[in-house]
Length: 443
Ligand code: ATP
Image 1 (cartoon, helix red, strand yellow):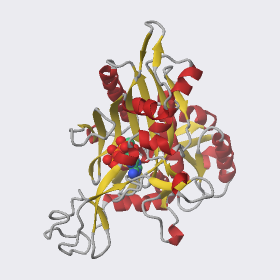
Image 2 (cartoon, helix red, strand yellow):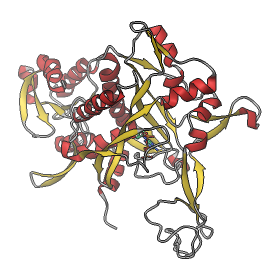
Image 3 (cartoon, helix red, strand yellow):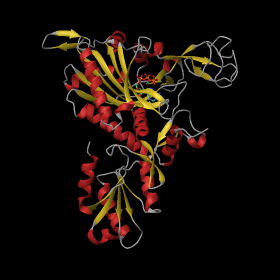
Image 4 (cartoon, helix red, strand yellow):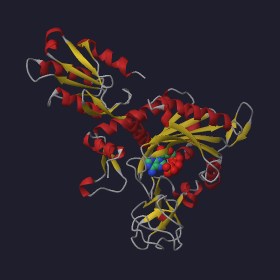
């Protein structure tokens, strides 16, 4: 079978240290991935950008970092115990398990005409059964029913149960929001497509609390803001589109929902959602906990339960969008090159410093420049192999600038700076390098 773009991306991600399969030396753990030296930087850059735009640049949003483990009653009240399920079918022949809506299944599961997509047996698929996607675990030393708790399947609930704490301690007024980045866990049945659908992942969620009746405007406001933010990642606009959920697609908590989809190599798929959750969560928590969660508007003396507009993004899926969008295969000077054209501010490494050859004072000067830049920028030093090969390695890492110290450098303290995308080289005075890079990395 020919190698697909995804195959190439997965192998590049491993080769260059973006993403590794979890526990690989033990044969790997299904749909769990580890971020290597470059991957952790890329994801961190995305998360920091999100945090800056949500929490730091806005006066009406506060940050939060709630624990992953929560009181089990949270998940009853939120509807996850009853409703966070996927319909599944099993193959009695090969014992594989599938989502009932798996497009590879021919026929109706449970009927004699249904065919298992893996072993091909007819009539071996069970009727669909509901399967809860939450990971169960036990709190404390005794593994008994009373000790059952869950790994959170979304970060949002940590925000709802802290809504009053944040409101009172920050002295915010409605409308205001709470933002959180953190791990979530779902026991996905047909995970796959690399880091697209995994069992452990990170979410970047913001819940915006508004006065009932104003949620429509805020919903439109946040849709526009999120699209603007995504375009700021440098993703090609023609690869992004909205998808409004039909009545049959809406999650148990939502009254209106739009996904933002990206055209991945495996098709258009969601990677962020904007949801109108009305008072679904706060009213359920108010009822289940017996604690009043109403807001008192002191100006009008009105009491109400706020409505919620949520923006919910996956940090890993956004990283996959950025990786897929940056991936290019090009022909340069008769040679094929693979390059990740990240927006410079998102790139894991900002520049690489190379001595042209390992003699005549070049390594010493190159090291000095590298040491000087390192405190301010994530830079890399490489003196191994021909300069062409060193450039190619950094192209694959997505490093936007290659700084080369050559014979002239030791004479006049200038270096060449190669642009990853245009391949143009310009001479820059060494003392100007920090200002040069800073200007190029803005935005
Ligand atoms: P899907 O339909 O793909 O399962 P969802 O509609 O259940 O996703 P939400 O519950 O709205 O997703 O979660 C919000 C975001 O969290 C998603 O847009 C996605 O970026 C991320 N996300 C959800 N599930 C996963 C997963 N299993 N792996 C990686 N990211 C995920």
